Length: 299
Image (tube, rainbow, N blue to C red):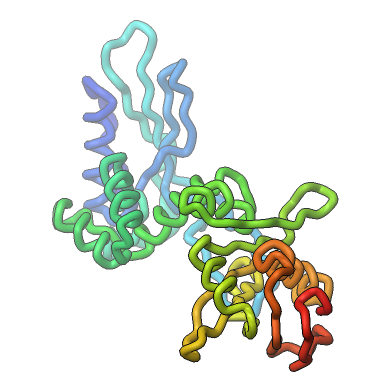
């Protein structure tokens, strides 16, 4: 049977938590804060396996949850005329066994503000998650190690905060594109959301103006998470070498999307002044297929 922390009075809240965590760690369970009312100096503490599992979507994968509706509860309170914190056990029962590896509990792997700042700096410097994990673990006690998923979760949170509620296709405009002096054009729907984003660099434009006769267009990949097709325009130099001409994030692979993307390349980038001899395409969704034109505006 798992034993609860010892009831009693503590001079500070930090000492109370130290006692609670030491006992729970030794017993093989963790007790985070469930709810608190600091205006009344009252905190409800429960097992990290309390609560009911959230309903999952229909999936073929086996889905499990840490939550078992464990009834364990303790309360910490500082009364109005008291200078100490009082710890009382309301329900000492656990409905699960102790954990062999205490690091299976996220409560014992919690990141502090300094570590979060380190993760942000190292991820910005393109350090791999494994390198970040090794660095932080070397600064921690041997019984407070981190798992790789902790790093992934924090990096994901950092990226989400940088998005500031914007969609993945909107975010590059205010960050990378403007900061790196890219030339870009966007198409929006009736609600003002970006549906297509065409971007190129001034150096790429210079190369396209120098070698405008043949371009190759193809999808390089689709991101699995956001499902945004990335269209790549490649030019050919007189030495038969390829160079990146432009990129386009497209809403879908339909003829209107291709037409809009080609218009940006021909009208905005090539300025309708250069002769586009040949366009090769690798998808059957549009009608252009190894056709030859005297002038680019005939496409």
